[in-house]
Amino acid sequence: MKIILLQDVKKLGKKGDIVDISDGYARNFVLPKKLGVEASKGNLTELKNRKAKQEKEEAEAVAAAKELAERLKESSVTVKIKAGKDGKAFGAVPAEKIAEAAKSQLGIELDRRKIVMDEPLKVLGEYDVNVKLYANVSGTLKVYVEDDN
Image 1 (spheres, rainbow, N blue to C red):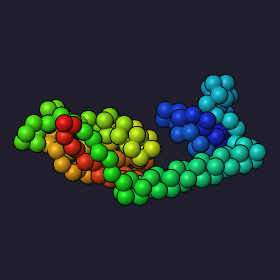
Image 2 (cartoon, rainbow, N blue to C red):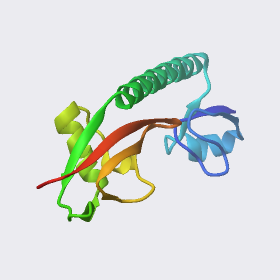
Image 3 (cartoon, rainbow, N blue to C red):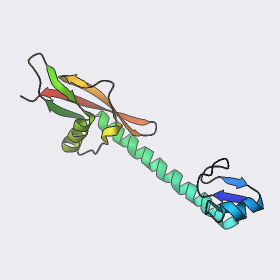
């Protein structure tokens, strides 16, 4: 019996896969637990439409992420931190502070967990900070760390 999986099933397949399983396994396990539905013409058409819609939404999300990456490339934020006379900061600039600065100065909402810094920003100056926006899409934001005094 051909079944369209509605959920991931261990050792059988992933959601959306069409698998050929025995009639007993389908009737006694997969169908009663709503892990899959029979692969009829109507269900196959619905699966095809659902996959097309999902691909379209993902393409839109990637396009929006690329647009945001271009916008970030042209933008910069300024973060103020207390520092000593030699330009060394008392503490470091966390990703959360950069996200807050982006929201207040640029109106861009960034998730602090998506901001990737190789090392903490502990010295006054100019930095390029990498921001992961989507799978395989990232942008660079210029961050100026200045003295708060």
